Image (cartoon, rainbow, N blue to C red; front, side):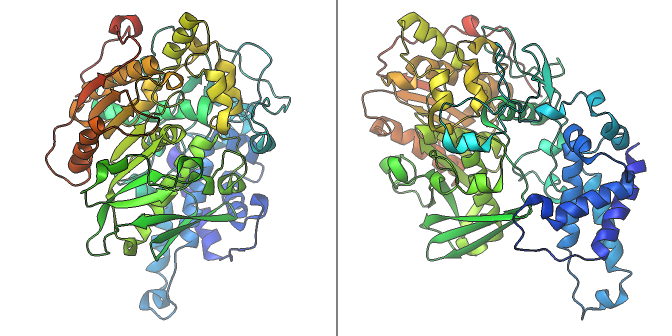
Length: 573
């Protein structure tokens, strides 16, 4: 069935490309974007003039993304009028069409088996067009999916989700998240932001009944994975769950990312769906085009200070570049910002920051004069930026080493355990879900509805941590910081080890918790761990890594695996 639609669609796209079409740089509204007009025309040419575009987009967004990606490829396909290929024509033109065919057929799950049928009856596909990541909050008990209200995101910390009058699935229902599309040129490489385009994402439940930690190895189809190859798509399922219920959607593959480097500053310009925006990062101790250096990307600026993360002097003596990213330049917690000018999907700021780092990497790949070895990048940040750091590492596989520091609730700390501690203490001893779910616009507005119902979450934070695996991960925590959750953070660190065990890469993971120091003030006792991970995973040197290490705790640490885990850790082959 696929080829039946691929050939006419590829032909339609090629015909549109051959007819030309100038991109209007002044276009500010997506509906006026000539690329979107070409998408509509190509789909209708392939599937018929009566196809319902809205229904097709809702039921199979990956299909539309594939069409858009190929049109962008064709629009960027340039012929030198003075060249022999341009004169011959017959050699250059077919290559564009074959590129279209290849891109449209490159990834399973991006194209519906019968797109015409899906467009007529999207409900039959299991998707709910009204709940494609933008469902409003319900007045019932069931927590809901992401809000579509950009006004709320920009102006309110505690407001409820926008009311569109569309019904939400009940607590026991599920939401289908189709796979998104990645251009085939990226999909053919392992050095990509993610592998979502290669994975069919199944039905995501909005609610479960599970007081223990959900099984990270249990697929949405109810089958446990058994191989390392299976993990690629299982981690994408987990990511889709977080996007749907906690963070909001991370936009992928913008039409164009440009980078320019001068005077220690890299400027990133992003163009997508007819809109453009730019931001800059500072780079120090960079290499050269011929001898690029590994780099540490660190959140910095604003209330947390202007340094590259909060690792202090632990990086002294390491010949690595430092890239300082101020997330306020992309998505300030006060609202607005470049990200939300480009996208309007009710996302939280954490996923917007993660998007920003992904665009930095895109720009670095295209700007060798910046002198950065993009294959050896680390990411770090503390506190709220520790949460952002974990999200960056989870959602971009090009990060070789992730170092979240004192990330607390919403980072590497278990919701279920935090709720238990607060119940035992009779007060909000650890930052609770409602508080974290409304502070800083970090998460989608509906996520706070899980407060007091943490056992209904289909995930817990060990699964966000697990998304980094098998890549290197050093979690740094501060014992004695009540609000950060000394116990739930420690238990998250120990539970997350199971994924690294399953993948046979325990040397890539360390959980370190030490007390007796100020917030975001790395103690000397954790310096060696930072140096070892940097030496091994950025510089390619010898170092001993891989342990669970905690000391100077003020709370009793008594992690009983059987109390929280009722699944067996598989050995993935």
